[in-house]
Image 1 (tube, rainbow, N blue to C red):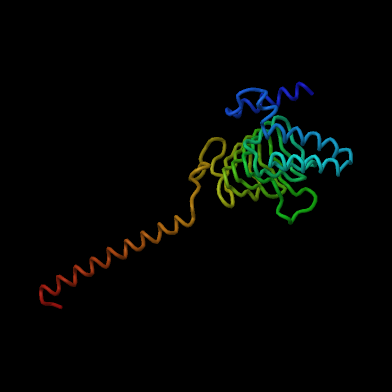
Image 2 (cartoon, rainbow, N blue to C red):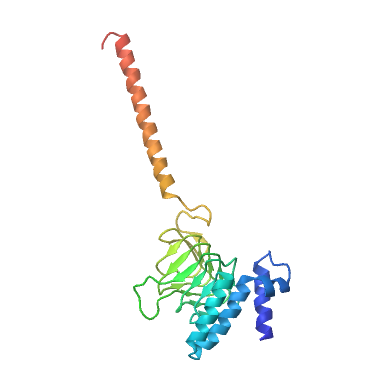
Length: 222
C-alpha cells in the first residue's frame, strides 16, 4: 500500500509543477483524493457492495468535482489535472500513465448496451473539455486535443482534434493541417472571413464599373 501511495505521489509531482511537496499532494491535490476514493469504492463494487461504492464516489464528487464510477477500471498513475468537471463512466477502462485535464468526459452515447464507455490505452492524454463518447479504444501514446469530440477509435501514437475529432498526426508525422489545443478553428469566424472576402471582391468590381462609366461619360459615349 505504501509503495502504491509513493508511486502515485511521485507521478503527480512529476507532471504538476504547481505541487511543491509530497505533503501538498497528499492533503491538497484533488487528483490524488479522487483516485484514492475510487480505489476504495472499486474494492466495494467488485465485491457487490454497490450502495457503499456509490456513496464513496458521490461523496468524492462533492468534495473534488471529479466523478468516477466505481465500476470503471483504472490502471496505475492516472493524473487528473485541476479535475473540475471530469466524468468517467462505469465501463470505462484506463491504462497506465494517462493524463486527463478538467471538464473531460469519458462517457457513452446512450445507444450502446453492455460496454458503453471508451477504453484508453497507456500514456494517453485527453485535453481540457474533450469528450470521448462510445465503446471504442484510444490507442497507446495518443493525444486528444482540448474540446475535441471523439466518436470513433483513434489508433496508437496519434493526435486527434476537432468536432467530430479527426486524426491529424500519426507516429509524429503530420497527415493533414495540424492544430494544437489552442488554435482550433472557429467556424463562425471562418464564415465571416469568407463573406468579407466576397464583399471586398464585389466592391472592387463595382469600383471598376464606376471607373469605366466615368470614362465613357468623359468621352461622350454615354
